[in-house]
Length: 239
Image (cartoon, rainbow, N blue to C red; front, side):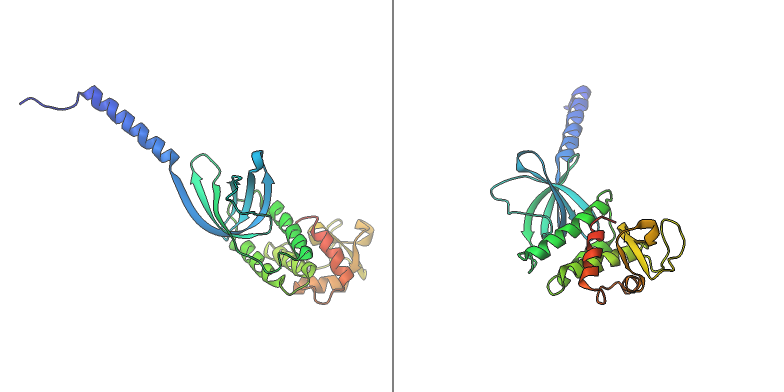
């Protein structure tokens, strides 16, 4: 009998177009993922759109937020339940945001201190993709502490925990500049809470015993308000 089929060239052409269509559809496919996280940083781009960095339990997400009247306001420091719409070749789009309210966000002193700490953390993590869950849990704990604890003390203790987790917290009085032990009763504290002789660094001096005790305990409970304030401003220099 006569074969009533498609000409081989037509069949090949049809296959080509079908394959191309499938590739285009796959490329344009949108994948939606639901997450929770803390906004570490936002940066404005054109037409009031935003780049937003959100720390989740597994990674630091950089995503794109389109400006629109239907979108609720978001800001650095907010904890969000959110949806990412991912499309091949583009930054994921931030959608479906729901603000998971923190009771103290309307307290200006606490909010400003919290945002300052998050800027330090963002600078530290911004080149990372995947992050250990520790960083997210640190913010969870810190957010709860801010309900009842002095903000500078709460954030300093979080900073000490972070340094200890990364193996960078000094518990011995060794000068990072000359590598000799600090035998004097006073020492100086530098960025990242590195320790130094007064003669080597020449600023930010503290009573050695009190600082080392705070570092060992990862607690500010025995530090004076003046000592806490000085350490807080050193913390803001970065990690």
